Amino acid sequence: MPASSNQSATTKFVLELDGVRVGLLAWAEGGEAVGDVVEVSLGGGNMQKKHVGTVRWSPIKISFGIAMGQVLYDWVKAFLALQAARKDGAIIAFGANGKARWRLDWSNGQIVEIRFPGGDGADRSEGLITLMIQPQGTMLRDAKQELALAGLQKPKRWVRGNFRVALDNIPGDTRRILRTGDVVVRRTITEYRDGASRFPSIILGPQKISDWLLTLPEGQASEFAAWAEDFLVQGHSSDADERNGTFEYLDPAMRPLLTLSFKHLGIYRLAREGDAADKSGVTRMKAYLYCEALDLDRPATIKSAPKRRPRKAAPKRKARKATGR
Image (cartoon, rainbow, N blue to C red; front, side, top):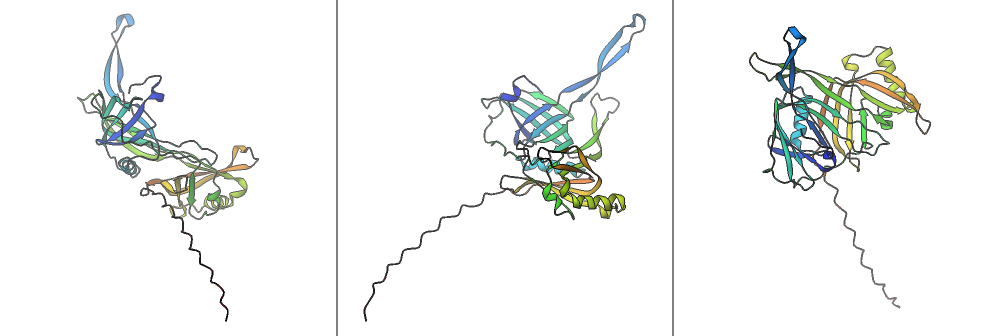
C-alpha cells in the first residue's frame, strides 16, 4: 500500500466491501506482494544465485471508529462465530481535496485478527477497533475515475471513558471497574499450495481469545474475591460454574453503541497491580478472566430524544368584581 511521510495528515481512507462504501477509516496499511527469496549454491567460488520463489500478500491492517456500516459488523460477527466468510474489498485513499489518489483492491479476504479496545474511566481519547485481513491477492489501481469523497460523514467518536461492564452474580463490583484491557481474537493461518501454483491458498486454524483484564479499587472487590475463592480454592470451576458478561461501548448519553458478550468466563487470578496505588492513593486490584467465546451486538440506530415543547402558560383568569347583596 503506498505511503508517504505526510500521508497520515492529508490522506483519508475509505473501506469498501463487496462494492459498497462502508465508512471512513482512521488508518490503513499492508496488502503488498511479498516474495520468498530462494538461494542456490553454485559450488566452486562460494557464489550464490538468488531468485523469487513463492509469493504471498501481507495482511491488510485497518483501524476504525464505532460508527461503520452494518456489512462490516456482520462480517466480524461471522468471524467470531467461526465462519470463514470471504469478502472482496478495497481501500480507497483520498487527498485533502476529496479526490481519489489510489485504490487497493483485494480478493477473497478473510479476517484473521480483531482487537477490541478496552475502557478507561480516566481516558477521554478515542477508542479504535483494529482489524487484520488476509487477502488471497491484491492489485493497486489508478483511481482517477473514482467518485469523489462525498456523502460519508465523519464517524462518531467513542471515548474510552464511556463504558459499562456486567458479570453474572457480580452486581456491585462491576459498577466500580476503573479500566478494562483490550480483547484480541485471532485465528492462525496455514498456507496451502498445490504443486504448480506460486500463490498460496489460506486456511484458517483454531480461534484464540485473549484474557479479559478488569481493574478496580481493592476495597471494592469483595464479590470478585468471593468468586476467586469459590472458583479457584474450592474447585467449583466446571462449565456450569463459569459466568457470562458484557462490555458496552456507550455514547455521551450513556446509551450502548456496541456490545461485546463474553461466554464462559472463568477467573484464574486476582492480584494487586504492580504499581499498587494510583495518584489518589487508592490501591488497585486486577481480575484475570479467561474467555471461551465472544459475540458482538449492535443496537438499532439511536435517535435523539424529541425535544419537549414548552408548555403554554395558562390564561390568567379575570378577577370577579365583588357584588353586594
